[in-house]
Amino acid sequence: MDQIEDCLSFYLGKAYQRVTQSAKQRLAPYGVTPVQYALLKVLWEQDHQSGAELSERLLLDSATMTGLLDRLEHAGLIERKAHATDRRVNKVALTARGRDLQEPLDREMDQMNQDFLGAFPAEERKLLRNLLMILAGWKQTPRTTDANSRFEREAEQQEGTSSEQ
Image (cartoon, rainbow, N blue to C red):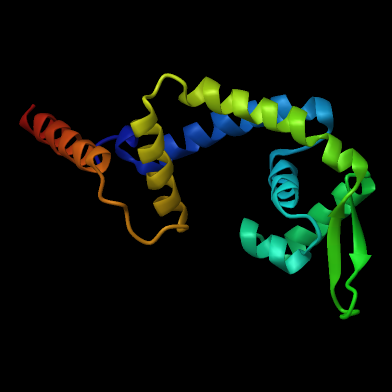
């Protein structure tokens, strides 16, 4: 590697910083953090899940999930309810206040996505999402699409141009 700009970690880190800072600023007026928003989003999709189910979906360890649930419960956004047939399991349920936040929080995050991705054509947004999923380990192999093929060709051309200089 000739310079820091050749390092994947450099650009991913900078992108992470920008997106996370924006998310924090947008969610702060509602008293919610980005990871709390993620958990609420999963509950808005399907309420009354166990902590283990939520941990699996969000790829969080049990200690992190417990702290997250504690903070959301303290804020009055969720409540833990005993499982009907298994006393060892608690179900996590949204409160009315937690349900009421769906529309404004989704609106904020949709606007944030638009702010960052709006200049990209839909095909490139989809490609970026797929590549990030692969890098995050959520997807085993890339889909072969015209967008992927074009992106690969452009990357090869840029590498060829860089090495010729």
